Image (cartoon, rainbow, N blue to C red; front, top):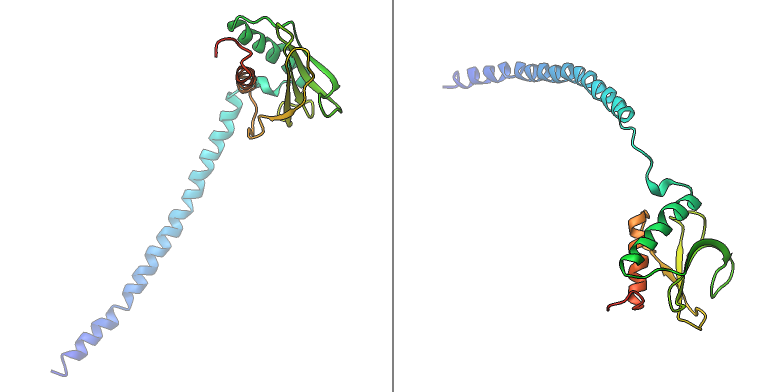
Length: 177
């Protein structure tokens, strides 16, 4: 019986070529890996062609600040106020002293019927810059400058308009509340 274990040991020596067989599969993946990068190069070329085909018009928010405010923001605010049956007495972009704290900045000044006033102040001529809002009832001066849209990373026209109207509505300036 001692002879029988020896032949089993010999097959174990025969199992040594099995790792050599394992090496050949290792070679195959490396060979397969070589064509894979070539396949990856083809998709790289395709995305390069796609952006050229995507000639999208620039976003309204990418327009220069004065153009954005004068041609998009103010008309959109006038339209939304009109839907609430309110025609502003004044709604314009100006650069003057900020209410309450002073210091020149670009702002949109609005005067609603009855003498109610609001100021949307921009720290820089950029709609993504920090913004503040001030409100004043008829016959009084604004006493508080509030941060406006401070948590928003990317500003859009609909967001600016809706939040301004929401703030004015919070003051109960837009009619039915």
